[in-house]
Amino acid sequence: MNAAPSVSSPLVTTGQKFRYALRIRRLEFLPVHLSVILTAAFLGATSADQLLSGKTLAVVVAFLLGLHAGNMANCVADRELDLIYKGRLAEAVDGLGKRNIVIQIVTHIVLVLVLGAYVTVSSGHWEIAVLGLVWIVVGFEYSLPPLRLKGAGVFQSVTLASTIALLPGIMMIRAIGTVPEWAAFVAFLGYTAAMTMVNLINQTEDIPEDAKFGIMTSARALGLTGTVTTALVLVAIGATTFLAAAVSLGAYWWAVGLYTVAALFTLRFISGILRGVRGKSLDDAILIARKNTRRLPLYGAVMGWGSVVLAVAVFAAR
Image 1 (tube, helix red, strand yellow):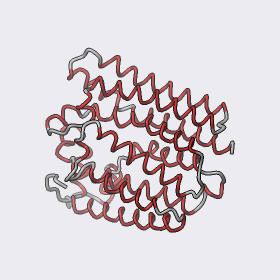
Image 2 (cartoon, helix red, strand yellow):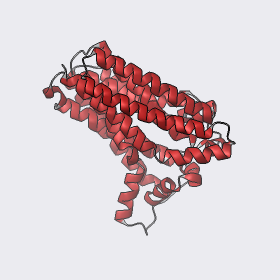
Image 3 (tube, rainbow, N blue to C red):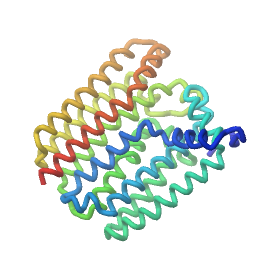
Image 4 (cartoon, rainbow, N blue to C red):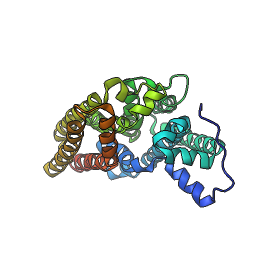
């Protein structure tokens, strides 16, 4: 995986290895990730039986396993880069050892394939298998050769949006078994656009390190101010699209109001970053970005779970 060799230290206890294993799965973003699949489920389902079916549970588990596998692969691939600013991740990679992590990744992917096969056969929607394979391949090509999509400029964020939200969401909606209104797909597309801000803002703190290693991320391609501006625009457009589609699907107005508050709360956060970095030198702007990215999981969760509430309101109105 093109990372410097690392071996598991005999001094690392079982408890430490367990903590390292959790760390490289990037669980700080778990609330955001859960909102992805739950939003899709509630937008697509028309009954409680569909929500509680084995297919739905299988998609949820496969989604989380796939994301964890991708995060682990990214931690191994980025070990040298993470030594500069995200030392905790590099420490976890060294503490576990590359072989240990590869075994975990392979185990996760095998389980994802088994669950994907079950969902495909039980739903009768064979496009799920195709989408699932694309999801796995593109997800790993984010960090690994030959494509290394992490360095694809603005397409890096397109890759992340597709693998973290869009493809899993479409698979969930199709797996449920009904043919939902087109507005459900439009709503989820709006959700995906709005939540792309998490990945964009998260990239800003790594601009100097990515430049040192020659990685052309979206943040480097757009520039720090351009990245934050893009995140702001995507939240505004995505949230508006999600709201309009949800209203057309009959969402209750109290949920529309709550989601609007969550979106405005997030827009205020991003606007604050934009005001802080605009006109600053890169070094000063990076310090401001890093200070704010510590709060990013909170705002991502607020936006994500506001989306879940709105999707629940759509489901309840059916």
